[in-house]
Length: 369
Image (cartoon, rainbow, N blue to C red; front, top):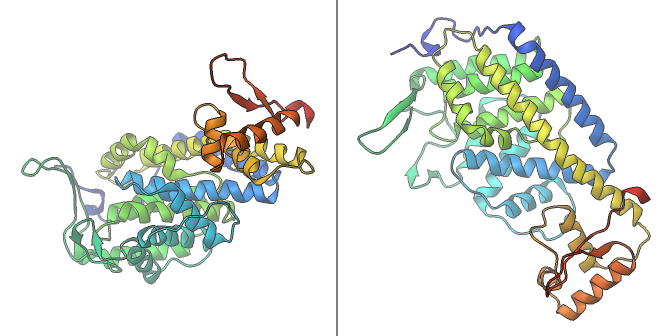
């Protein structure tokens, strides 16, 4: 079987082909600048909302990559509370969610702080507050002391995808990694994010949670690259979409003799796609911000505000009186009054579809701004 990259001498002297990555690297840097510029044209609350959405997705999707489904509203509420963002309908969240959020916010909001062993141990302990991963007791808040293999398949037919660095070498390897992380200032920070992700995953220093901590480290360096704790795109969301290729490229490059061009190339393409996906979300946020600017002086009650915000965000299906009543927890009579009031103000209109139940939609307001 081919040697693992860490079995070569001086394995962390990574190399890559500049020619292969230059075009995509330039494109990513350009897109980063563009998205930050777009966001800076938004008002304060719209920008806050964009950050809240990106951070929520990052936490939820990073856990989903590991097969763990977190409640989106609980995660969103936990982040909003910690960042002091005023948002309607906050819900309490459990201890586990609080821990995952704590780690992500520590990485992205304190992105200029030194990354130390203790800080990583704190993140790890926050991820596993009970000391268990599922039904299994694990070593928390310290490096692993056992062999580590990444396997899949049924018992007895397991397939070994990766055998990590020996436990007795983990501390020395991590010391070297942290020294490079904190003291190497010659690299562009986006490239550094790509290398840090790969390097950390190869060491696999913990019993569990290596993927999530690796992605938090990536986010920390991307925040440094943009010199801002405001996050507008989610790398973890994109990794989840491209999960198959993510594992394929990691598996391939883990046997490299030091050239990690293929990994860096994949990482940059994934980052480009993450930023591109955000441009669509940004358009929605800007659209919503324009609407509320236009209606600053319009009398709109809390029920109406709630449903209008939903129509801009993630409304599923068609808006009918019964749905309005359900969302706002009122009678259908009150719902119809609210709707008719908004039709009178030129905000809602009835759709052209026939049928027993009338459907309503937002009127186009672009031309009025």
